[in-house]
Amino acid sequence: MAKKRKRSHLTKDYCGYLFISPFFIIFLIFGLYPLLYTIFLSFTSFDGFGTPDFVGIKNYQRLLEDDLFYQALGNTIKIWITNFIPQITTALVLACVFSYTKVKGYKILRAIYYVPNLVTAATIGVFFKSFLDYPNGTLNQLLMQAGIIDKAVNFTSNPAFMQNTVAVIMWWMFFGNNMIVFIASMTSISNDYYEAARIDGANVVHMFTKITLPLIRPIVLYICITSVIGGLQVFDVPQILSGGNGAPQNSLTTAVSYLYNQGFKNYNYGYASTISMGVFIIIILCSIIMYLGYYRKKKD
Image (cartoon, rainbow, N blue to C red; front, side, top):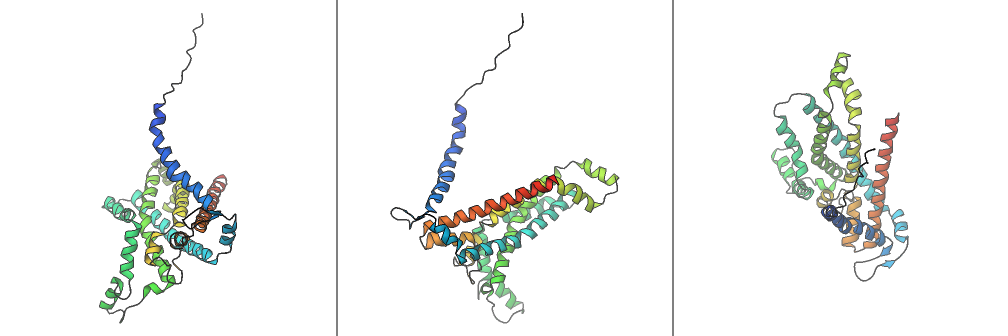
């Protein structure tokens, strides 16, 4: 007689759902519900009191014609590009140095480079605001004591200088984190590839461009997308340096700063929600473009 096959039984233990339920409860309350409510408010006129008045797509029409929003978005993109290019370049160079060369005290150096990422953006913003303050800021005092300038200079009145200052701060804060991610990806590459390349006569540049970069491309994509998400949401440092008003000449008014001012200063929550949806859509589009660009290159 043929042996009877044992029927597999799926154990239905509902205790598992109990353990994973906190995540879904927190997500529904603090993630999904605020998102849906923001979408709803973007179609209303609401000052925080009473009942929101439905206005249809008027807020979106206003957003498309809002010059200040375009200026804030342009400031945000400019600051992001200015800090991201040197940020990823510095992270890649340091990751290569720490991964493929023997540097004394490299563990301490990695920790030092990563430390700025642990400090809150608000704290760093307050520090640089006091550093650049006019006329008694630390920078002015140092330059006058060194005899480089005769009287205090109002650095905070120069739009280009302030935008580049924010870019430098963002670079300093986040290149260490990207460096750690690159180091983790580079050290996971098998050394056999490099040994074979050395036997074939490849130099360091060839190994980096033909072996390292292609194998860490998914990590580069991840860093680019997360950088876009974070860069288009930059808020703390520009807000503190400008005192919340985007000075000088609205050069430090970012998209999220403009959103904050509309919502919490002008009490125009409906239009603030529309701005947040606009920023959200732009982030989604940028992420999709990067994602599609990555896979197109991969197929080529």
